[in-house]
Image (tube, rainbow over all chains, first blue to last red):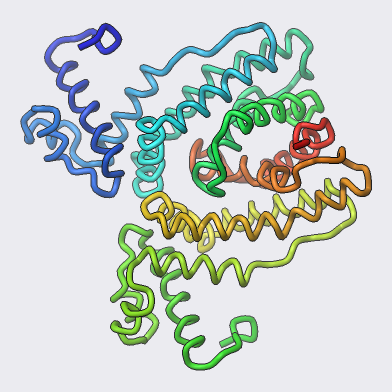
Length: 198
Length: 198
């Protein structure tokens, strides 16, 4: 176990970490529709009964995985410039979605959210956490007078990610660095023009 | 059968229309993961063997449904103003995604595309057709000098839809008319600023 994966807590926390890692592995390999709690227990080397008792269903497992992903997710960038901050955000999303493991994992949890309301709530909470983490970039840009007062910070952050997810899930066009750069630049241009004023 | 659903062709075309309508009904009710060819045959009052022979799998059925949706999809708006054209496009997408039947159908075919490569190809073709239908709005705006020469028309059209799909599938925020209006305005502002120049 490398330093990055050591977590506080005792046996319960260790079991959770092992089960969630196994759940992520299974989702990456097979997708949500074939996520099986017995298979996850086997991969995690944890008793099947423990997994069924604690997580109940595949959707329950995905919901807890998303909570963990929100807790473990990385802090925002702060460069002092809105254009640079949003470019860093777009690049992070682009790298995540094109990473073989992370990309497959996100696809799987998004599918889970379309099938199950508990998974959907967890997905929406995950993105609410990520949007709240990055919103101060826009709030500081308002203070620096880079964008107009009243600009909806959350909506600017959503606008940066949207074109990348659109390509991933909808149009199938490449989720490439040029798209990330363009998404960030578009959000800055629209924010400057006052489009996101509440 | 109302006038709007009469299609050219004989028995084969009638069977296809009945089966695709039944497939859409089943997708709206149960989603892609429970799409069953025998159930679709029953709903369409068509022999099970015909459905299996012609469409083979649930994904094959979704792929053909998407081809039909592309063929039947409505023409673009032409108001003579980029802002108005893109607003009409955004409103159309917003109404489609929030319509109970259409919204559920789109969710189901998007899920199908994450599970199966043939469905994914059909989904991408569907959106390529829709983007190509609306791209002339931007090309004409370039000619009218509303946006700079070299503006990537397809990318502007993708930008209009992206925030609506992001809310539908990712953040769970409402896909409301205000979001549609903002998505169109943002695409116009970014296009004017030269963000979409190839």
